[in-house]
Image (cartoon, rainbow, N blue to C red; front, side, top):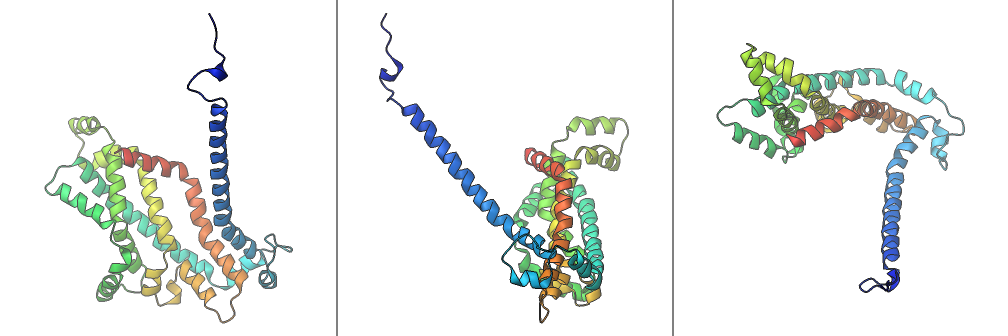
Length: 294
């Protein structure tokens, strides 16, 4: 029997496999290089902010280098102690904590009702919540301000918390409904047979099994609440009630801005949410996957 050499077999040009492999490798290298370039462009402003927070004003204005020649923590300490950032920090913490607690309490219960209970109009209400995802928040800002003025809560922290909780409704309900739908219905039926009421089933069975989704909702609520500027700018007029973004704006509005203090203030604003996300990242990913499966 005569063996035909591999290179001379019909239907396959010599060197075709190697050329295709080379093209795939080249494409991967190109994609990797573009992603690396995009990463550098995206991260550089953050690195510059961190660098400027450890410089004095003269060194920041001179520029020209990323690593501080004479790094100092005096800028951070000065920004924290003398520019009222501790008060702004506590105000932001109060608003964010109240918003997260109320969001979890209200929309976890709503998600449980949509996923488990059967009541008239359930389908229509679910579609309404999904539709609200596409309504820009800025379109309802004026009605919110007018309503809060009539209620007497304009300019207070509660005047921020209630709109934040309301604005988080569509996505929170969607995530919690999907998470509760993944819990086997047999658990609820067994609990009912054992005499458990609906509240006990919700709090003792469903909530513990959907902890990743709860943490995900807490994260997607806490981060935008912590960083919110527009509504706080419209609502708050007393400096003692300012949150961190407004405190940062007061630094930028100075006649002669001190860029090192401004960058130190920005670092104070972003570090808590970065640490929060990094510490709960695993639960965040699991919560999104569970909600999608549901």
